[in-house]
Image 1 (spheres, rainbow, N blue to C red):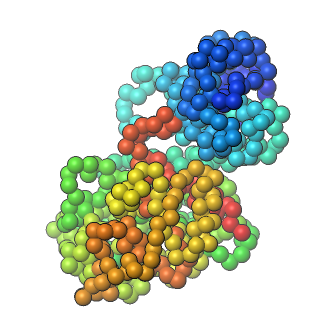
Image 2 (cartoon, rainbow, N blue to C red; image 1 turned 180 degrees about the horizontal axis):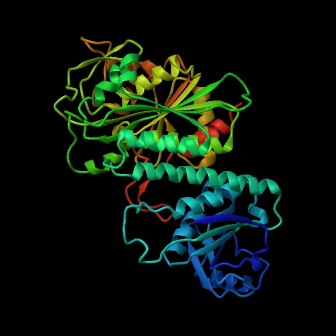
Length: 489
């Protein structure tokens, strides 16, 4: 889908369908001859402006557009940029389902802001996404969008810059969704590294990939232990952004779990739903997508993405329950459950970020525990921290981006569950508070660096399609991470 920015007035926009936002307070006014028709929709009860309500007018009077889609947005007082993003995404998906290929959205003066301009084009790009890259007959139904125009009559130049930022963010999020959606036979750790290298080369970033031998030399016994049951070699992917003029000495490390397929290892998972475990590298894909966006947006802070990438398989050389591994920072871990592998690869990446790169702040994203899904469902990512100021900074940009995060406790009392008679720590606690003890385990290796952990097990994958988004990978965290770097001061 091609996108463009226009400053044309509404009645001159030539397209197959023009979308206008409508609110419960009354019918929208376009200033064209179709206003009477829109008012008629309200009077007949076909449209009331309620959230998610869509009403399509054919041959609207006084418009160059062939159709007019009136998109309900609810009450104006509670409407914001994230709501607009969802509205535009739902409208684009609705029109796409009707084989309407050339679409425009009218951002009228009362809605115009940098945030809404970015959100509108993000909604269109994200809504257009389908997880059908490997289907061979997808062109048969002709349901695709060729062009999307954001029409903002009388707008200032800054609005077009915001639109351009939205394009970068949304395309980067879809890049992440493509990575997560790829099946595990096509997205091994080596293939993920190849995608990272290609993205970095296109974006002007530096990419380095550490192989098994280099990681062994660094003492990454925890990461290598997870990988030893698979014929696929592990890698640690490093993608680096260095600004031309850094505003200070801060260095942000974005760490993403990159388990390209997770059987659970010797502690094998049930077969039902295991096919979805290709998504266990969604955290790694998110930080790579964020780096793609960061390269285009050019913040003033140094940022490095670290993706420890492995397969967790039950091969003849696989790690066993009861094994003890030595981590890069020297601590020993007793592996009580080989299906608690994500934390084992993250902690060696933390050590590399701290010791080798000098990261002053770290944020990680990981599909870490099913416990967080029990606690928060598929609505919020669980957030844990050892530094409230860093979490508050992340929450501020996440709210603006409409990415829901909920702070979880990390009290020292939970450490009582992490005791081993044979090693410094076990890799799991009891069944109670599993997402919290997993986060506390990570904290033992993140301290004293300011750090935030996001458990995205419930938000990285959409089980069923919604009006604004296709089933499958969501690309959660990409926009928030990019905006976190962009707003760093």
